[in-house]
Image (cartoon, rainbow, N blue to C red; front, side, top):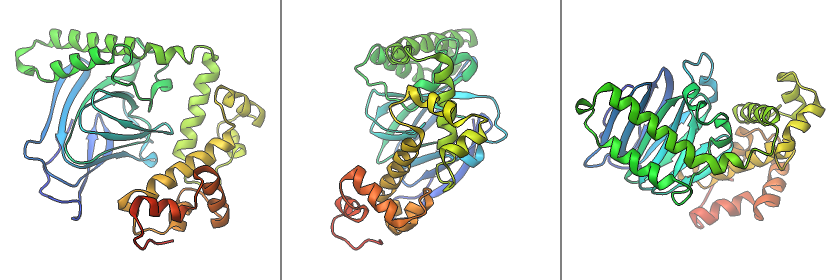
Amino acid sequence: MTRTPETTWQSRSLVPTVYNEFVHGERTHFAIYTRVPDPVNRAIELGQMEMILMRCGWMEVRRYAEELSGRSQRMSTFILQVRGHTSFNHYGNQIALDEGDFALCNNNAQYELKHGDTSELILFRVPTDLLKETIPTPDFLCGVKLHRDESLASTAAAMAMDLASKDEGKLSADVRDRAGRHLLDVLASSYAPLVDQWKSASAIMSGRFWKVKLFIEENLRDPELTPSLIARKLNLSDRYLRMIFSVSDEPPSAYILRRRLEECARQLRDPAWHSHSITEIAFAWGFNSAPHFARSFRARFECSPRAYRQQHFGMVPVLS
């Protein structure tokens, strides 16, 4: 892994340091706005796996859909929030991680990881094929929060923090490999209750559901994205697409609309998008009619987009 260069920016009012980094061959965008007195970014190899301890100030890590072609080895990452708070957007899920919480990330799918102030994370990277030996259907868990009080999450967190503190040079390669596999086993046991929630659904149907869901997430900004387009691109019939979505609680058209509205709402309350108009944000997320967007937004959030934005920024002038 390429090490993160330090940034000299002291405030988010300044232009951030933005750069690309290749993690296991995958291009990933980083934006770091602040510098903390004791930044940490170090890794320990655990056989095929890797553990990274990262402490820094305000940061965004993003993987874009257009970068997913020509992917290298499939990797997954368990994210442990050690200190601070992080927002994680992945597989259509937007979750908030607090201290002790875990989340699972598919490195070969788009995601956004963002935290403010000083935050400390442990990233446990695992080849997806190895992960499937303990969690056969990891897609079910991507972007889902494992709360610190659930199952064996606190045990897994304690193990991860202890392992991340070790001096790699004082542990043999065999010991590090065994430790990594042991941690993976405990994490798999921790996620078992969440996996059980999906056992009632057909494994084949559920697997296809996640394939369709990822396609939608990667093309959410396309105004031409419709159930018919999805079916055509994935060589499915419209009827079979509806059957696949039967494992969910909403049809594909409703899912597309909900996700677009959620992404618009996220940017409307994000200070970084304060200078962009509401219409600009809506059209960037696939809407092609301002009145339709306004009606849909009000139906979901019970207020207009403008009122929603003002709720988060007060009565300061905003672009509509």
